[in-house]
Image (cartoon, rainbow, N blue to C red; front, side):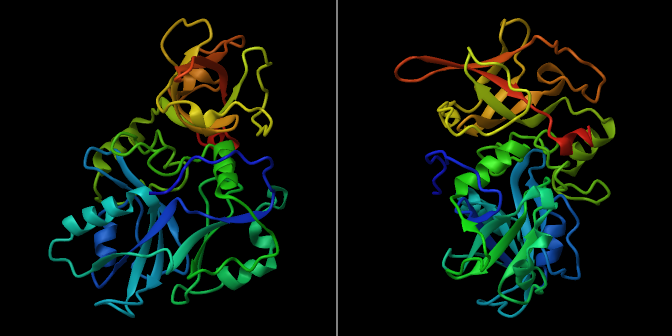
Length: 359
């Protein structure tokens, strides 16, 4: 099982790379692998392999999220279908056994094999650069990865979920990215996600409970609303055509009761607020405790986190149904109890720029 809580970094590097130990790879290879995935995930799976990966999700029939994934084309290196085209599925490391069992259960007579890759065979890395330069295309040494085809061992994929997320690299064995930049801890990647409001894995996109639109999977390019039948499609399409999504996962910043409300989200390494200690699903309430809760806390680190928020309740942005209930003087809080005492912090939600363009 992957570890999730670490000591909070003191600084977030603007240009760096890190290994994503919280993600693992599952191989699906054989003549029917593409056909199976086409009916199982939320975007179209190309029949002709393209040299890069894409973001998607597995849903249950009721339209709720099972797993958020990246899918990459590759050639199998062992087993019955060695040398044949297939797919690598990147998933939450703690969920890889469950996903493998589910795919095998519904494989029926289809001709493909399912294999969990050992971490010694291939690992997932994230690489990011200075956002002022738009993305990482300004780093020449990345060309050795991005210009390769899927038949070559190393695979690269632009992470298009949000601005500034950089690239994902799948490197064989114990290789590291041969890039002239700093290697950092995975927690730096995690905090960068929180700043941008990008949830990942089933601790943040709650398994069989979260809805894809509320989890921003549509905003992050993980749903093709023109696609034909797939598991969970009916509710997903109905929600899309209805045009009303009242709750979404948003980036949150916590601060002390005696501190001024932040005007923009930022990581503060010296805050010592320990957002990772706030229990999942803690209620976000108005400071004056009037009215219903404005959302639920999902995950955090330092002074940053993610929460499933009622858009019109907790932000000054008008939601899709054109209602707005937040007043300028409103503030919000989270209260919880640990073994020693009752805890409380104030919390503010932010609408990321890449959300504002789509709401």
